[in-house]
Length: 244
Image (spheres, rainbow, N blue to C red):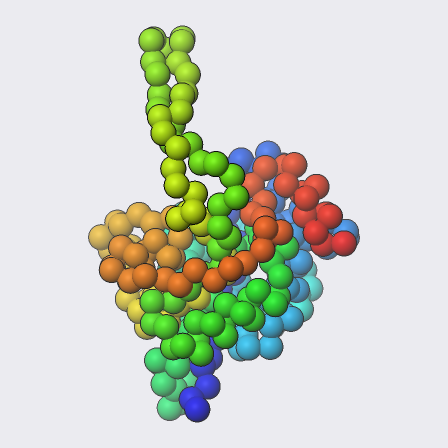
């Protein structure tokens, strides 16, 4: 059976404005290692991954001074996450084009955010096996079902000094999932969709929403609640617990 080749693109070009630290969140320390090193370490435990492309800011002065558990292909990112993902995938496809007798349709891209260091390697393995074994061309992503009651807000505005938010209605949480990364997609389709999105300025929040825009239905593969995205400073405390 034809072997699928898995490239991972780790997006680490952001500055983490909401994180409130003097350095980007991916370089904050947890148990003597940076967040980014923990993230790469988790990926290194997945034997199916064949290569790792690390997308960093053009002004990054930290990443290349660190030791990682995987060989790194360096990529310079863009102003927004979608641009950084595009540059990462572009680097993958350029490398693949240079490979003699390479079948482009056997290549997949696993995209992961640097700010998710607590991802479980077994969940990544399950994502790859579930999507690739079925050769599911719409791709897939780790996600978890909603556990809490979900409210849709409505803004009540008397004037600028007296604004408040109220609950407009309760959504059916049985149909709702929280998207995570990694997200896994066929290289050719991912590159084509990204190129169109960049050229036509189509905004998307993650690669799954990009595929949805083009009529695809990515597979939801159950992940873990511990795969938190570091967004606010207090999230480091949770990560410290999960990474012990």
